[in-house]
Each structure stands twice: as structure tokens, then as C-alpha cells.
Image (cartoon, rainbow, N blue to C red):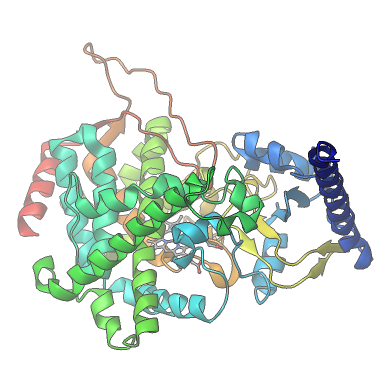
Length: 516
Ligand code: HEM
């Protein structure tokens, strides 16, 4: 009897497990039957347990695959990864219907147990819908609404001159200079903190959590598929994910507290007339709960606003190398207004529609977040005869929208003219959808776009961008690679030749830097 017991127990365990799996699959499939409507169509799952997970995670640039599936199954696609339903919206019109017109129910974020353990779900961008998110959102909206964003222009302009100056001195480090620009603007505004061009302590601290952020939603973490695992103690064999998560959580807290302390104790050292946003807001967020929400929202600014702005400017640089005719045309447009006697300024924006069109084309050509940021619906829903279960992960396929043949002819071509009317003015397609949808739309878009606009206009006014050359002055071959997995798609470091357009252009930068 004693010897039979282990085999008997094992058999019972195996049987119970398979019964649980079958029951789970049955309940899963019955959900849509109960609603009398089918799930939206989509490719068949490759596994009963993990659903379409392997197709999703093993496909580079999966947004392209989703577009192909949309051609086969329709614009709304249904997939599943373990317990989570995934809805991919492939058309702009459907995204507006669901994420904007029904934003009351489509404004949450998917819950990832690993994100929770690492503390990323406390950020504005990853927070679930509810009263705390609303407070975060209010902080951002108050701080970055269009008229507030106008008051930040002197800081943006000053930091732009610094960047142009660095382009003159060490053009080979252009990527680092663009990152310093984006980081300084966001951190000066929020904390009065000026980023050091090299080895900045705060930047290093936050950047060290980036890989964890990029992978935090991944089903590679078992706990994301089986949330019950979050309760196992960190000393338990196989629970190293908990130690990793706790290290990331400590770094997040350290970064948040250090910068807040800096802003509150050393505001005058920022060398700017601007009062850091956390200082001006802290009076109204004085209770411990409110203060903690303010600190979390402030800390979200770097993660949400720096890489996005930096990569958008990098994509502009790439486009100018690959499409020299567009570069020449844009330079001529800037010269028409400045006559080469000064650098372009924000007040020139209205007079430079081609530059505005070029910025729109940059965000359309290579959308940085090809699948946006996932939304989640907190109620069951029905749409066009399909059932969309509560807590689905809902992705707008922004990349597919930027390739809509009805809106964009020859979409891989970089052509700012597609945003201009016959009279040379801007048309109605302002590309806002690359900044998201509904209640979750990017609250920093006015600031981000203004930084990108000034970078584009001043770089074009001052420098010729081209391929790196060999010792004999011949163009070297160019191959720019992009990240292919994860949330964002941005160019990996590449080489670029950056030369002042003339001695006058060089002098203008030197003078401006001196005045700043
Ligand atoms: C060109 C630069 C930028 C791009 C392309 C961009 C894009 C986006 C996108 C696609 C979203 C998701 C929207 C959605 O879920 O529907 C988002 C959210 C967000 N962005 Fe931006 N962004 C940029 C710059 C900035 C800047 C400069 C800031 C702040 C300083 C910022 C702060 C945020 C925040 C806080 C969220 C989360 C909003 C929420 O979940 O409620 N972004 N951004």
C-alpha cells in the first residue's frame, strides 16, 4: 500500500491538472457562447494553454503580421496569450469607435503581475483606470496643456542651442547629444534638474531599469501567466524573479525620491527662471497619499517623454540621410524665412508649413510605438457583431494605420508633401493618432512635438546631414537597424556625417550659445 501511494498521488495530480485545463478551455470557449456572439476572427491558437503566444512573441515586427492577418480576417483580430484575450484594431476608424467614442470602458491598462512587483504600474502610463490614475492625469494635463507648453519654449530653445553647439564639437556623438537634449528639457521642467552630458547619475539609474520595463509585460515571466506565483517567497527555489523585481522596485523608488528631494532643496541651482513643476504643484498635493501620487506622476515624465522625443529626432536624422532631396527642399524652406541670417524660432512655425509637414511625415513614416500602448476594457463589450470580453488587451495597430493605402500612397516613401494642400498649406491630417487615443492620449504631445519641431528646423538651418564618408570622401554604405521586439520600434545607433552648412551657420550657433 505504502509503495503504491506516490504513484497514486501522481496519477491523481495529473488527472486533476488535465481536468482543470479542459475545464478552463471549456469555460474560455463558452464565454463567447454565453454572450451569443462570437469572438472576432483571428488565426487559430497554436496551443490550448498558451493560445497564440508563440506566434506573437516569435514574430519580429509583429505589427506587420497583424496587418497581414487583418487582410485575411478583417480589421478587428482576436488572439489569446494564456488567460488573456488580445484584440488588435487595424483601422483608424475602428480605433476611434472603440478607444475614443467608448473610452469610458477602454481606458484601462492590462495588469501585469511582474510590472506590479517591479513598481512600474505606479507610473502614469501603466496605471489602471481609476481615481489614482485620474489624479496623475490631472497633474500632466495641468502641466503640459497647450498654453502651459508655450511657456516652456525659452528652456527648449536654450537646450537646443546647447545641442547644436555639441553637434559642432563632437558630431560623432550626435545620438548622445539628442538624448541629453530630450532628458534636460523634461527634467528641467519637472524638477529643475539639468542633465550632465555624460554619465549623469540620475539618467544612469533610470536607464538601468529600462530593459526590465521593456520585458515586464512579456509572458516569458511565468508569473505573468500564473499570477498566483507572485505569492511565493523570494527564497523559494525558482523565485529569482522576485529578487530581480525587488531590485528594480528599489531603483524606481530611489530615482523618484532623489529627484523630488533635489527639486525641493535646490531649485535655485537650475539656473533658470522656471519653477520646477513638482515645486509649484506640491502645495496642492500635501497629504501623504497625494504627495506620493505627485512623486509617481513626476517620475513618469522621464520614462514617457525622453526616449520618445529622442527617437523621433533620430528617425528624422535617418530620413534626411536617406532622402537628400527632401533635406534640400526643407533647407530651402527654412532659408526662405531666415535668409540664413538667424536660426529659426518658434515664432516661425506658421511660416514654415513644409517643416511642419516634414515632422508629421517623420511620425508617420516610422511610428515609434507601432502598436501604441495597450489599452484594456473594464467591461464586456460587443462591436460589429463580435463579443469583446472584459479585461482584453487592446492594441491599436498604429503601424497598419500609417500604411492605409486609401490615406497614404506609396507609404514607405518619405514624402512630406502628403500633408500639404495644393495651395501649400497644411491639410487636416495632423497625425495625432500616433500619440494614442481617447482618455489615454499622450498628455506630453504638445511639448514633445515642439521639441521635435525646433530640433528639425534648427538642425536643417545649420547642418548638412549625410552618409558617413571614408578617408577618400566616398559615402560609406548605410544600414540602419531597428528594434524588432517589444513595445517600441526605434533605430539602433548609426553613423551620420554632420557638417555645418557654412561658416555663417557655424558662427550663428557660437553666438547663440554665447547669448544663452
Ligand atoms: C514625440 C514624442 C512622443 C510620442 C511619440 C509619444 C507617444 C505616446 C503614446 C503613443 C502614448 C500612449 C497613448 C495611449 O495609450 O493611447 C503616450 C502616453 C503618454 N505620454 Fe507620450 N509621447 C511623446 C512625448 C511625451 C512627452 C514629452 C511626455 C511628458 C513629458 C509624455 C508623457 C506621456 C504620458 C504620461 C503618457 C501616459 C498617459 C496615460 O496613460 O494616461 N509623452 N505617449
